[in-house]
Length: 334
Image (cartoon, rainbow, N blue to C red; front, side, top):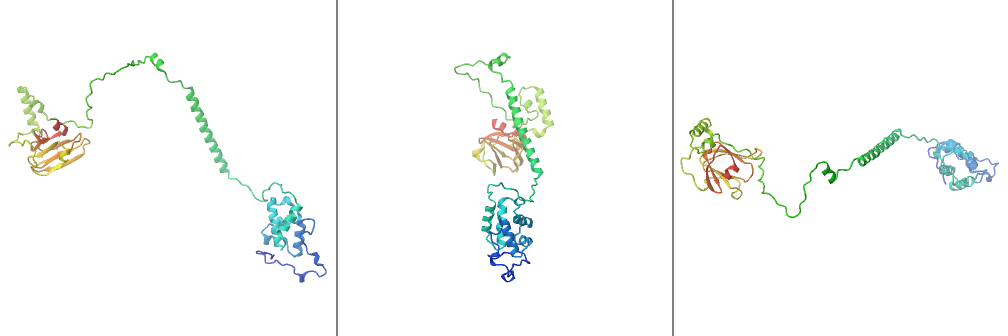
């Protein structure tokens, strides 16, 4: 087997022509030369004229390890598997049988159960932060466990809730349980819609329509009419249609989804707001145009001229709009 010299440039093997002619051929070292494998490797190295540094450069093994192998100072070497590898590489570098060298080493040092030793020169420096993290984690786990134990102990020490007899003893009156049919009272009225705006009340309208015949009520109505002329609905100059007839575009909801229709008798503005004061419809209506109000709760209509707007409920006329601002629910109820 040719010798792998690696990066060694001064490796010179002693050829047959350089051998001392006075030495016999049997003098060439073999694996059986010397008392042990270390002596055999040393004899083979010296026979080839190599130094320990030459072999160290070829095998990439420390020179101190090669010297320890030759002197069989095994306590200065790493664990047994590493030492066997070094012996094999040493023998191969000298052109000898590496496996035979390993067998000779095992026969010289029959210790297969020897515990592994750490490689010489290897430092074991641990990161101190790892230990700190472990300690903090253990403290957190311990705190969680202690907290759970304390909570369980507090729940076990808490007094149980009072039972029915104890509740009766402290003055809690329990309704007697009756058997048989239970009588229900009259149904309660539906709650008032909280989102429905307060209907606009025309100032003086109630006093003017009271019909008690008193002069004071008439005077009050006249006074309020003078103070708030915009809220007074003038009587129509021409008779009103009894049923709704489209005389122009009809805006708003479809006919099947509405019962209230507002039709302009003359140009006027119309604004329809929802319960949240959002504007559903806003337009300047011309004479004959109409608007169908959707069946939604909380709608209010606001017009510039109440007398210019006729109200139809279910297609039937209900007269003029009573005020400038009126709720749709009030118009449909009337």
